[in-house]
Length: 132
Image (tube, rainbow, N blue to C red; front, side):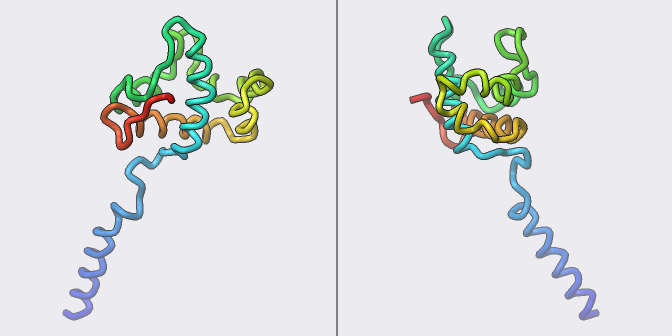
């Protein structure tokens, strides 16, 4: 009987520890690196566009998640992932220090980083962020 109680106690403690052991968003990237890339690459490009800057607070977390899931940029003209691709970073590294700094970061990591920053910085996110 004692071993059964000990076993059940162990299982209960294990179940209580699961939320702390597994990240809330398993796909989260490095939001700090994502912030630098977003602010110095994405925002730099958007400043030159008619729509202007798009800060993370321009959308809710759900809207950002849907935007990244769709993966379309410029009203579907381009793949969103193109803008974190190594080829894109190579093409702008001469005029953009952040692109040059992150040239060797794997595309999938940088993709997750930018998503983590935008979602964290959304108007209803953990730390709403402007692009300044």
